[in-house]
Length: 87
Ligand SMILES: [Zn+2]
Image (spheres, rainbow, N blue to C red):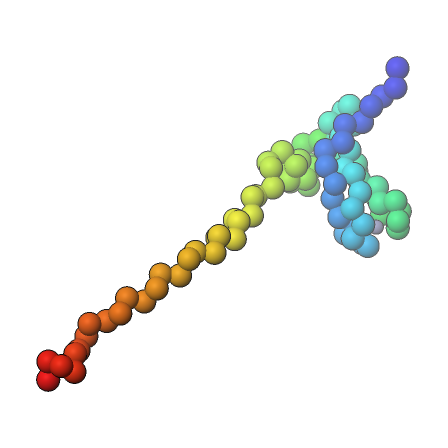
């Protein structure tokens, strides 16, 4: 029976920026290993760093506000401000 580590999500490597999987072990600790530069870190369960990392993946990334659809520009109403005829 293989021990499957749960993949929480991808995280950019702090050293080189390559995205790699953050995995959760059976014990609940999180591990991150960069395939490109061999940066690796183990965040033990219950530590602030682990909680922070976990929270990062627990919450869906903040949805970016969609750019407002181009509103049809209201045509400037012809101003009946003054009329030459009335002078
Ligand atoms: Zn790296």
